[in-house]
Image (cartoon, rainbow, N blue to C red; front, side, top):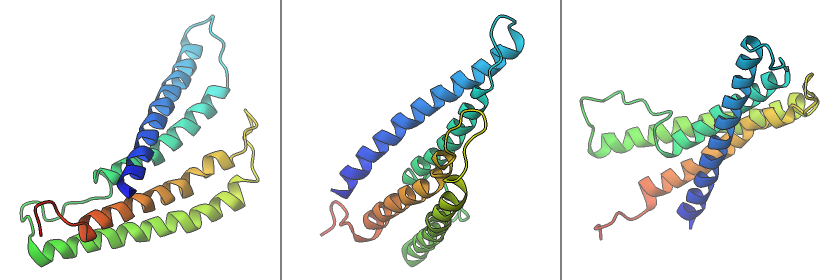
Length: 163
């Protein structure tokens, strides 16, 4: 059940990343075209759209990278390939460090959002900056979801073929 929910959320995140990537390309393309092609107007709104898209894309990409174990993972013992108790210790250390970072993002990210983002509006588009600042706690909660899934899969789920 948890894996199915995580898979559906991952599909949603992939879709959002595609939309944000296309938005970023369009906004930056508008900025470049406005500078060098005389008949295209030089608008200011693509600056904010590209900034919002890039920040959200970074945080959503970190969530996807965490689930696929391509982010936050440094292989210090690359040539050793640990086994047994040492490998289990490294997995526990990995999850403890990530849970600590996740705690900081959830707790202080919400504070950051509530105290700064929710009270500001952007100067160009008049969008509430809470939309931008919400990316921090949302990324933290998403990391927590995938960390729980990873802990479940690595430590509590019965392996196929094991009895």
